[in-house]
Every structure is written in C-alpha cells, then in structure tokens.
Image (tube, rainbow, N blue to C red; front, side, top):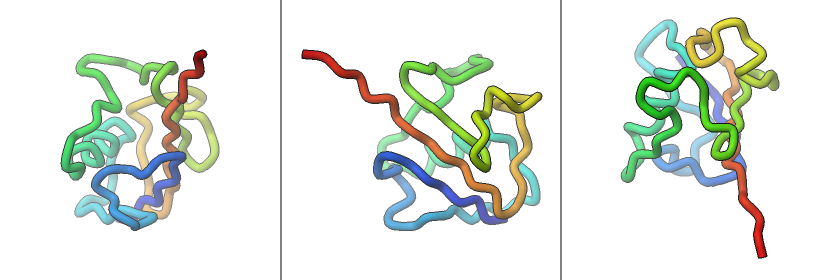
Length: 95
C-alpha cells in the first residue's frame, strides 16, 4: 500500500521521498502517523498517547485535501492505497 505525503517541513524518516510503502492493505491515520514517527531517526510525537485529536497548535493534517477532523472517524479514519496525507507543522510567531 502506498500513501503519498505532503508537508511544509522535511518529514524525518522519509528522506527525499514523496510516499511511503506499507506492508498492509489498510491502516488508520493514527497508525500511519505512528509508523511515520517510528521511521524517523528521532521520533516525532504526532499523536500524544491517549489523545483523540492532534494538538491544533502543533499539527494540521488532511487526508486527500480534507481536514481529518471533518471525517467521521477523525484519527481512526482508514487510509486507502494512493491516498495523500498532508502534514503541516504550525509555526508560532512572536517578537
């Protein structure tokens, strides 16, 4: 199963690739983010343990252009082969 990844930062563990190959036929967004984190040299905590949503001050995630919060299962939404997951890190401004 191939999932395409778009981001506004260099996703650790993806190298210069635009997709990730998984050895399964179905996976939830939560498990996908955990798998992506596990592939990084220094794991990123996209999903905090026990959380039902991502921290909106840290992450914005879409599946095929739709914010994951608009999907009925949110983090437990199923991904399909060829889906695109967009991950944006939220940049805090200050001065």
